[in-house]
Image (cartoon, rainbow, N blue to C red; front, top):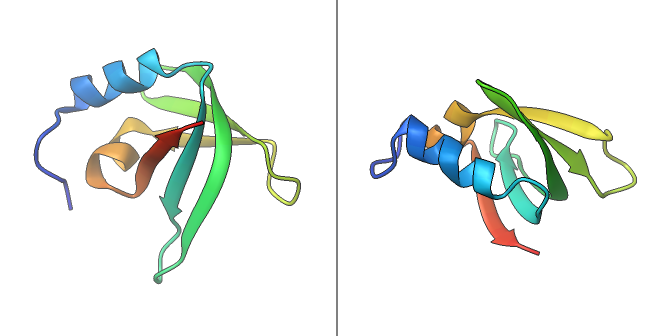
Length: 80
């Protein structure tokens, strides 16, 4: 469900401003599984953004859509 407050263009702009920054993300993987990852926002595309994960047991690059952030499946917890 979409959280109130931000529009999709505002989410895109905020993530665009964080490009190259190290961030902590909380990712909802479903069935009450919340994964916390430390990553760097690597690339910005029109409908998705990629992050480079710093953890050893994870994939090197993960992709998320701006809608994932808008609806709360991906939350940016802090800027490291």
